[in-house]
Image (cartoon, rainbow, N blue to C red):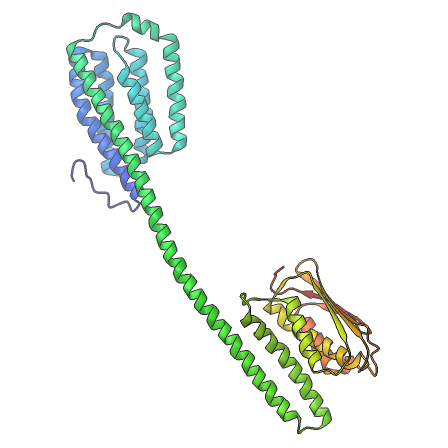
Length: 403
């Protein structure tokens, strides 16, 4: 194992590897430098040597702990707590010694807590050390100044070495912090670049799928139109009653064809504009009718309705509109049809349909296939309805859960 570059393959995260290296290198550096400082202080000031010796033992312990456990986080707690404790112990007990370096070590321990542990630990160290330093300044500073003797050459050299080492450690911590920031920015840019590429792929796929789905709706609509054309050709050779059944079938197929037409012409392939769709449905049905001027009023609280709801709803409206155009109005009557959708609760909505026709010769709807179809479609939409003459009020569920 290299002394300053130990194996870090047991960590996957860049930040964990960097923190392990930081703890290891600081431990090795502390052990090396404080071996020299302890020897120098032992020659000139035994009390100062005790504090330095404790730092040396802490460094040796940290190296052994890292080597055998590979855990770095407890060591940052050790450095933060023991560093603050030893620095403050020196400040409070060694009165014949300047403490410039001790204050610098306190800053180092705070910075270590921020980098190696977390912000809470860093602020905890700030509060603890600030409290102890305040006590020292208030109660001991003047006494310390009075008893402080001139520094010997060995003491000055020792302090210079320690100050240089503090600068080295602090510079290394700043360097490591900058490396963390640079790596974070690099990872962020890399992630953003990957996301952008992924989004481009998804967007391209989405466009392809949209075009494909529109083409499918277009082809389904065309196929339904072909079926309608075949049925219209076939009905000319049928009996009047059978021809009537063919016309009803054509109308229902036309309703579904109109949904597919609306979808492939729309930007949104999942929902249909209700008022626009019903208006076109009314125009289509009325174009095959020989009735007079019939005005249709359409209102909806829903701007868009999903296809799961719109398909059965469209077929239902087709039956109602067809019945109105066939049976409600005289040839020259100016009629009115009112269609309204009102939002309700729990994803339910009300469909209100009525006309002002006279309903000459009305059919027995309950025995009519159209009425059976309306009942079936109402069940499909998990709803119910009430009919009074030519007025219907449906309570239906929005299967698409859209507003």
